[in-house]
Image 1 (cartoon, helix red, strand yellow):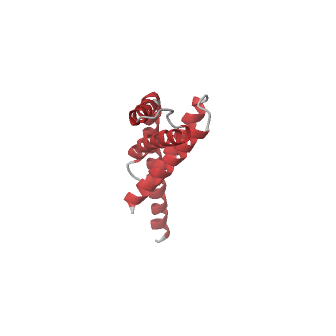
Image 2: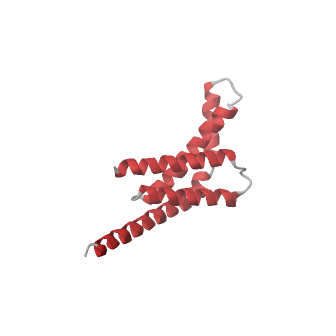
Image 3: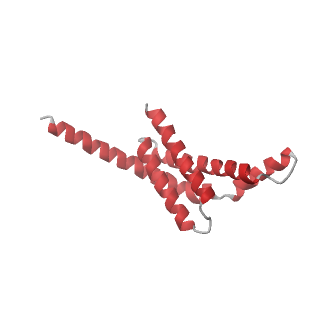
Length: 132
């Protein structure tokens, strides 16, 4: 159950980030970092454990989803398959999302998992006290 919850949280966060990277203007880095932070917090919270990994994977898979959606929408403009591979590699290299957003996302994912542990621990403590 926990494994499915982890991957469901990562995929949901990646979809949020992929759509945000595609639809929102990239001229506002503060807005993008706010979206990454909120998505990573939510991913870490719902993943439960390994929140830092969940936050990092959210950014990584969100970036891959952004590349796939951009390639599908605009195409490469070239006919040869090597041109498509080069276009995708250039998109992945140019997108420094992994360097800019992965570390804050990992930290926020850990914070989300920590908040869930604190919240779940407090709820369990209340249940124990209530049963006395």
